[in-house]
Length: 415
Image (cartoon, rainbow, N blue to C red):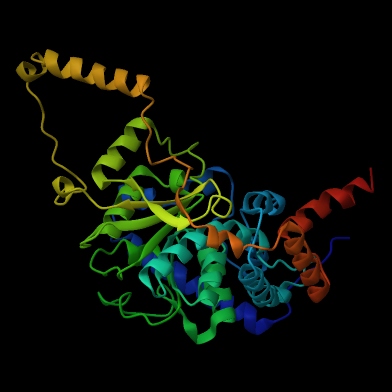
């Protein structure tokens, strides 16, 4: 007999169904206003090709997204971090309990607290801390593809303003529902909570947590706030080339100074085919530079870096669709020998000197400060003890993979 985990809270179910309907109605409405080549570029390509659940139509599916994409990463994340601070440990506990309380409604064998996603977000927050110290104030942070939204919950605890641009409907609905539960009136869903969009809707937001649908982000009339740092974690390579260029253009538009971007691991290039030619084009068009930040090599792990970028002036008036100039036979027959030799020389130099691109680089540029290292006094066992205390608190396992792994454990009993 199959176990029944039916949600018994009708108010919750009705709320989810209402939000799904509003989102789907607006999604359908705004798709009619955008060209196919742009719409297809902002589809969650990797998720669809890997059979990930990108769309949901009922509340019963929501439990699957708590800490999704971070299953079985607990010890991997711990080994990357090595040490944590007392403040980080307190933040993990606060976010875990607050998030975990919202997941009780599903009454599953596990009660996820988002611990894996939180641990993988800590290297990003350590760079955020360095930027906060440098600016002397709290930051405005915009994440491209926030997934389960754990970075946003952590930013809220730390006092930063967080914006999450999400194109995957299932993740969007998950964030819309549980950010409301966790942050109440301090949350703003720009896709669901407003009917008429004005150009300053993002700039005027006073909420600490903000959720942005694709039709708002693609609307170039809607101004982007003066964001201090953008974040693209685990997904840069998974975004289509057209979309990544649009995002970088949107992020750097109208800025006097270069925009800053944190990348923690680049994601999988299996489906988007990010090659050397495309890396060069993006870096030239947006003046990519690897930026230094204050930290410590024992605190800031390999894999999370800080980048600055701004669209090159010569591309500032570039149109998305450029008119195609058809060359005459005469033009085709007069290739410059100098250009051909120059091209071969460039390829030869890149091979000999092993040209490095910022895109794909995992080595952070750290200005070592020994005092920073002194605050990281907690080790891996302290995090494990925290997880044990959370399991005592919820009376259930709290890692998402515990439920997945239990399927195999239970099955083995019957072999």
